[in-house]
Amino acid sequence: MYLLFLTLEGIDGCGKSTQARLLRDFLSKRYGEEKVVWTREPGGWPGSACLREMLLSKELDHPWTEVFLFLADRFEHVKKVIEPAIFSGIHVLCERYDDSTLAYQAWGRELPLAQVERAIALVEHLTPVKTILIDVSVETAMKRISDRPGLDRYEREGARFLERVRDGYRILSSREPSRFIVIDGEAGPEKVFQEILVSLEEFR
Ligand code: TMP
Image (cartoon, rainbow, N blue to C red; front, side):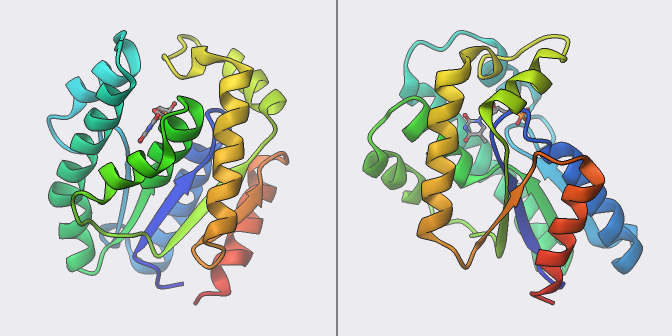
């Protein structure tokens, strides 16, 4: 399972942070703690907290402002965290990446897909070796989100928005079946994790 650059994707409430933690622990045991980096977007590089706060908590009026802020966050994240790790042979587990921008901004916000794709492609950056898409129903996701203390802008968008994002992820995964591993996230965390491991071991 020498994958190096792995991303985790899914709608809010799909359980991706729990799975990222379990996978980080598993890979750390196998390769050593110093050989695994667990990071996320937005806000995965030192000094990026203000960008995360702006994206998740402030009212941004123009949907393209979101796209450009997510991309600014990503390109800096790639330069500061992802590339240095990968070039040193360290595994990177990243929660959210380009697929989030496509699923949330093109499908969720209904911006033209070709334009969002063009914006992402403006700057060359690494593509993940594998992307784990944790698929849950919007009903399950909404139940999990409603247990959280304060909801961010995207979590407040509601069921119809999440349905569009979920459709987007499904289409993205069918376009690139060799990169995506689609996992049913409805079961408990341990069962979901076992499924992820089985799928990843195939690429050893
Ligand atoms: P999370 O860290 O809890 O997953 O929250 C990040 C939120 O930001 C989530 O609702 C998805 C959203 N998002 C986008 O809309 N576009 C993006 O490109 C990224 C990275 C995240």
